[in-house]
Length: 235
Image (tube, rainbow, N blue to C red; front, side):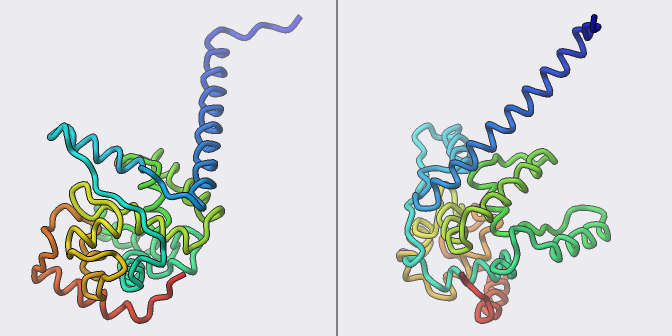
């Protein structure tokens, strides 16, 4: 007669099994959602929900500004500027820029703290679509899996289209169309090279900058991005 396992062993087994099942269901949901987004625009992303909750904590009537526009109605200058600023090897890598990751590790080790990151556009999209602003190894692992799914299911063109439509460009301002109208009073299709470079430069900290404001620091960064845009490949 087989010995019955102790209750604590069975409980651990059930917990592990439940955790694995939850992961399978979660990633099944993510995969199905990505397939839907191949030809449907997101109505709202995880990051939009997170930011809206923050805004409504201060103002119960707060709303975010967001309107999805197709790839062809976004200025080519903005596409070039975003790749130049955020992910120079976007069209070549498969979701992760290993050279940039290695360089970031070396820089951070020299400084003894995190001073450089190496997130690609695909990784940033994964975070914006599905994850919170939390920083943890578990979240980074989820981000890596979702990034791989995005690259496997979507074309580079669609990844860039989604990214430009869900990125935050101000307090509750999401996507290229809302950003162009908020900061410059024009549609996304009409953004000039200089305006596009400005939007690319403020993206890491979009809520710090007022409408179209150009400080000496921003002017220098805008000129740097403008100088790189001509060599950028876009999908």
